[in-house]
Length: 521
Image 1 (tube, rainbow, N blue to C red):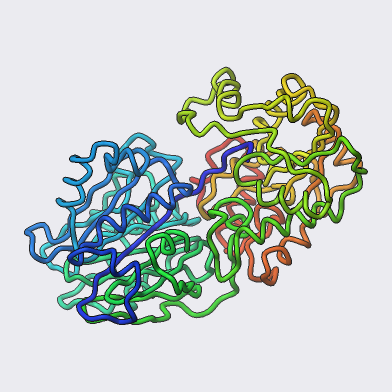
Image 2 (spheres, rainbow, N blue to C red):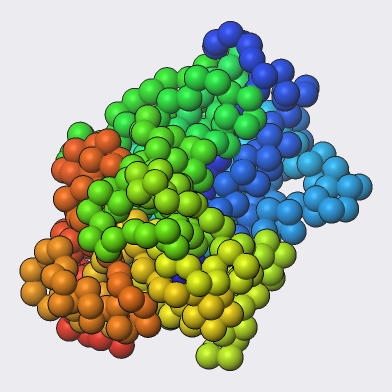
């Protein structure tokens, strides 16, 4: 992808139960002495695509004074766990060993360099069921409203500017009382307050764990069990590479409660209209993962097929398909196969380029040059069909196209986008900028419809290319293999699946340049 979209995070959890609950397999055999910590670290590394800002784990070990203990910091998984320093890495895994644990990788728009914002969050308490750790994937659209609701109560104080702390306070409130509450009742209580995406993994001082998927199923969550080992992850690939074989996907509004005796699936919220984020298949998830039993790779390949099916620019002997690495490769492969023209990697991603947090004009230009390598010998004199998975702000795409003309010496550039035009922000866990920063909204002032040739020509001129085409909105669901009514397409059709999300969008339209997320929805 030419412009990096940032996702809120990923979650992982492992639990070593007292008795086998399923046949043994590679995953359960890989856990030595019932210590799940190395497995959680590996799972987080497998899901690094979902967040590179911070990482952390929280583990349960009843044989140590600190029954629950949390280790987290800013940085990638390798940086946080010191994997390049073998002795230090082993010390961390030993110190935080446990029979059960949860993990998290984070991207965030606030507190970027502050370890306090890293997850999991831990709340200490003398009562074991009130001492808990949790992590979550998503964003609460009604975070400002919930924050004010808490602060309006007597002697409540909020220290951080994010929804994770708000979730912690609501969980703590649901755990009140003189006796430990049923964990399904806890999730049922808090879910009535939340608007948005919130997959949660949780563990308490009694050794009880739960994992829950929000009632709309906006973000993916999967599980598997082998022998004594139960696993949960945002992506199937993390479970698969640990050795799990039969991987299942949570239903929206479903949770699993696990303790030493076994596990139980429960429904904490009534079934609602599903709203699974289509961008998970188009961009975010690893191509090797499945989401809700639908292959990410095959979905992207089908989008490429569709782009070739609706192509209106003739191909010739100089035509080649070039993907913007890496997430557009599957779509480019599908386009190339359907069009029967060569797939050529005229762009290579520089995997050794460092992260750049300061994005001024000079720095952004350098970032584009350092991120991609141009191969003139592949591109020179070619009619390039450049496949990308989306165009968000267009800044990086424009810079990349200029390099294709200048350094690649191409004959023509035709941009093909494996996503409809992005018209609106996301309030459920994807950093899609404000309306005024997005490339496409000025071309669609009225109702959402497939762009006319005149609009496409104007867009192409703005990008500096010969033509630009997008996958038709009505073909997206077919490519994924789910009914359109089961998908959240808000960023491309402006129809949000929650009340607060729709209100935030209306506020955004009327408060361009303002911090509209702080308006009450």
